[in-house]
Image 1 (spheres, rainbow, N blue to C red):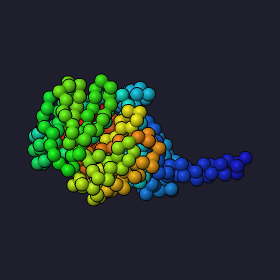
Image 2: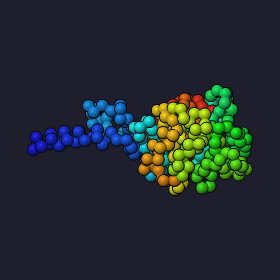
Image 3: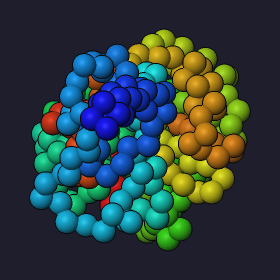
Image 4: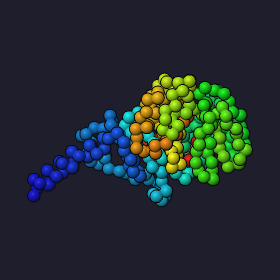
Amino acid sequence: MYLLGLVLVFTLYSIIPVLIIKDESLLGFGQNTYWEQDLDITQSKLEFEPSLIKGENFNIAEVHTVYNLNRYKMTIVELSGKDLEYFYFKQNPPKISDLAMRNNCEVAINASYFSGTKLSATHVGLLSIWGRQHVPIGSENQLTHAAVFYKQSKTVRFFDANSYKSSVQNDVIEFQTGPLVLDDGEVQKSFVNNSVNGTTRHKRLLLATDETNRIFIIVVREKVNLIELANYLRSLNVFGKELDVINLDGGKSVALWDRYYPEVNYNSNDRLPLVICVK
């Protein structure tokens, strides 16, 4: 019996790394994150066990879903029925983590493009928040589309900037960004190829939605061009088939803060002038 027990324990420990080292994994509440190349199969069992995030009291059913993928060190945050807020700081923005906690954000990310510096910035392209226009629509090869969030339905849509007319509705957020990467699951090579940085390799942050009106945030910590990334996103079963994806500001501006999954936080203590807060 003792010998049989040793065999069972050895078998279990041998399986654990196989279960964790896979390309696509759903991150459970409070679960630690491990990237494939960082894993050491000699780690003890305790290091693979999930640990609760201390100091958080909430209904687990209301928490968003997070996926981690080894390729490109990618995190996908799936959101449904959430509110969005858009923050624009012209001077001296706070840390993203501080902003998020003060405003009761569930998730916070960097938003669209700005000129100047992080501490003294001007929004590039259209920005209209709850019916008040801060910046008019612009004509930039990079800023191909207007991303529009509708508060009543809690949905996001992307519209070609060349034909888009800004709304005066007080329940809509509109901001210009780009390029559009996927439209109904089809790679938008023309928009990407004509953009400033679509064909070169950079860290990325993207906003997406599918035919079920789910909203996704896609954080890519490794440098990749948008055509390559688009084709990889199409291969994943995380999304619906009619996936729309748009590029946000990337490179050194990529930032993610997550209240419930702090292990996926990235660059969250940076000070950025444009921030999207998910509530």
